Image (cartoon, rainbow, N blue to C red; front, side, top):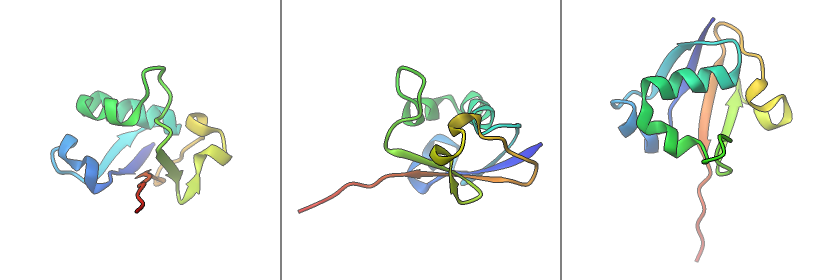
Length: 92
């Protein structure tokens, strides 16, 4: 199943400037595994040491937050799109 992963501009320096990566996967977690196996420098920016997705990284499958589904076990189908959205903090 071909899944498109949208890479935010802040992380494209780890994907050879590609902002979309296509992988074969049946879950969001499997798609992430394939992504970081292709672009190993990306792993430290997406995962905590315990293997969980970093708390400031939001992941959406077809615009739906996976935290309200089955997280990394969320099923994906061919043609689906995964968006990686890092949270941005700021203040005065």
